[in-house]
Image (cartoon, rainbow, N blue to C red; front, side):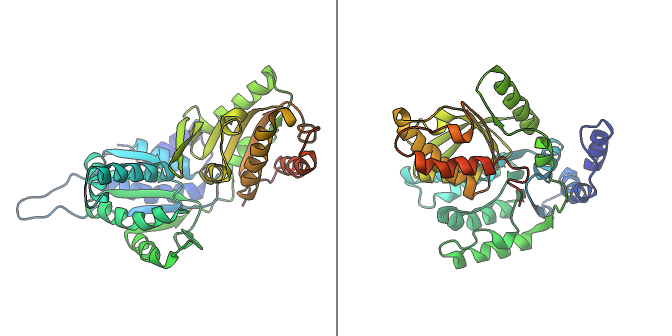
Length: 352
């Protein structure tokens, strides 16, 4: 079977990828895991199965190719594997635990972890980050159960392990998990100097007006470039409610204005969206006035959340930022939003 480096080299040869020595070094680490998993397990009554290979925690800035490498790795997995966004996985865990509690199970995490253990031998997470205290209290024990049963975990993250759940409530209770993670997973930085996601937008406008056939075609072209047509709906749970992003892939999200601002959403929802997405494609922003004042207020809150999280915004709108809200209550306050929309169009916006 071809190694991951062979597969990568073949894609470089066809022009699908650009050779990057930092990515090639990360591939060697992933190949170690793939090759170990491909080895037939030799065990007998007198001999225990060998321990599974160490996992990998691959961290680095956005756009460095972590998700692309994970795609390549999971596609070549010799064992049952699952690739999932970390935030979505934790939502599944919470839902499973809720059901187990309703069924009267004393240790609600156990049956949920056993389901994962039964179905996969390799668990690949995108964008591991801990921002919620409930996740922080669960993830240490969950990882311990999975690893103890032989599940290999590989994850990408924008943060070094020591920055997970940084400044979080009762963080001292989370620190043993960080130590466990560093003991049982190889930690490696993907320190490529090139931001490939930003490169895909280089030379492209990110704010399209007016709304029409041409702007929709330009938005679609950028969307396909960023997601390679692999997007699916992505459900986020916020305080027991579900907020759905119609399109999502590898931290790139897509929604229409009325999906996010026409629904009764609030700051917590927008903060969760900004936490999950590094790029948001927001379509069909209308002109705003006293006639859609509630939608305008939500839009201001959404832009504030995206701005503070430095999310890259790609948008289509009925008018330029300064002309979106020209009459009615709140026009003065909207000047700050218009200014932020302008700043978010700059070439270096969203870079760390």
